[in-house]
Length: 176
Image (cartoon, rainbow, N blue to C red; front, side, top):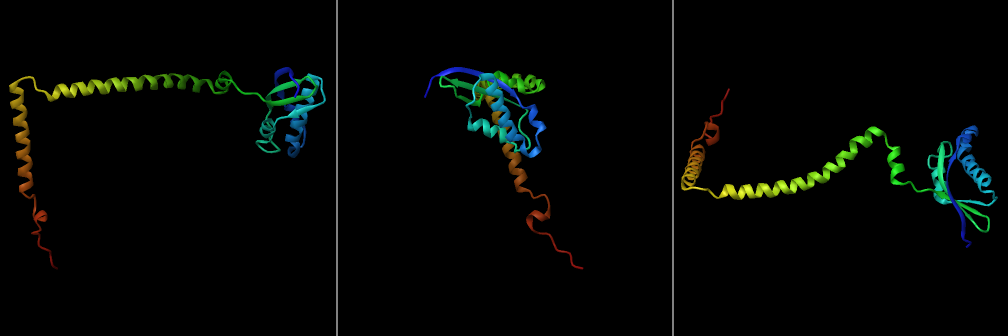
């Protein structure tokens, strides 16, 4: 295959496609792209890439896109190959509404910070728990022991005494 002589990115307007009948609009779009590139690259041999063709027919024959961004490569032997141009990150960002760009940009940065903060917070909590487990004085040890004894005796008392006869099964059935 011959070497690339010229490579150019074009934004081809397809507004004239609306003049065609609804059922012929995507066909007309293909013809418009060929005519545009034949005029600008001064050649009669234009090959359209499959991805570009699928983009034109993506919404059916009645609703082709209003404009298409393409990469045209003209070879030494005179033929031209046309493909969809890849969008850069900046172009993708410009397509999004401004209010979404403003609200989402800080959120992404905060997520990274939050992950680091969570790890640090977990480490601090673990250290605090270790410190809580070891009482500093003998008085605190005695106080903790008394509290735990009181809790166990209260639990035992509530378990032994039934609240009503329903729990013991002594309820008499009413007969009418």
